[in-house]
Image (cartoon, rainbow, N blue to C red):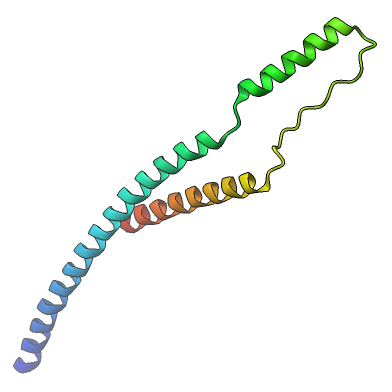
Length: 118
């Protein structure tokens, strides 16, 4: 019996050290993931904001249409309807990828927070 208790005591000591080392490494890795996800999300958000259309262009176009209607009266031809989309599919896909990368970055940060709390 004494030999078995020595074995299990040694096993417990080694396993606790190994578990503590693994927990410390994982905790450090999750800290790194949180920092990277936060910085990436901030930079990605700045790029997403820069990709948005300028609202002044829409306002100016609507003001020009309003002035044309006012000057020509009710018999004026129907003004051209403003297009909300630019018609460029590459811009759409670039924005879609940007939003997807932001969502995945926030999901990674959420997973890291859950891992740290566990």
